[in-house]
Amino acid sequence: MKKWLENVLYHYGTVLLIAVLVLAAGGYMLFQQNSVPEADYTIGVVCPESLSSEETDRLRQAFEAAAEDVNGDGRAAVQLRVYRAALGSEGQDPTQLGALDADLVGKVSGIFLLSDPAAFDAATGGLCTRDLRKFPSLREATGLEFAVAARPDHPKAAQYTAMLGKLAGQ
Image (cartoon, rainbow, N blue to C red; front, side):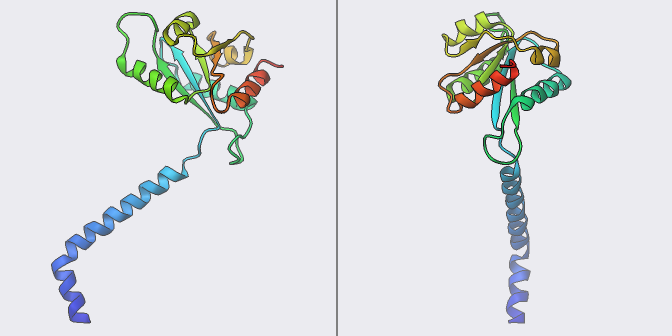
């Protein structure tokens, strides 16, 4: 048995070491992928300029204050997807427009914050319903004025509507 083990390690030691390293790396990646908490809400932000990390954090905190734990993990988590796009203008970044299209087609975001709601409506064909209420906590968080549009056909539309009601103070 000892000779057999020495023979195997002598001839296949490098291959076995590489296999162990690949399995360890794969296990680590699977662990990382499955240990990331899933967001309860996903919100798209469509504006011509990118938001700073401070503005994004304040905006996320404003939404999380009104959000409820939908997936049962013990905390309300909001993911913001910022699309730097001035819809209807020349010279758009096709990557940003493609990501926004994928979000719309895949029904990823249930709410969109819009700097130019008319251009968004024209670009999406009225896919989202504008919420005409005022949201002072969003303006306070970023100093920017956003229009809010909701996806009525989103699977979690009722939860998004409830969160918007809390944000508007209703």
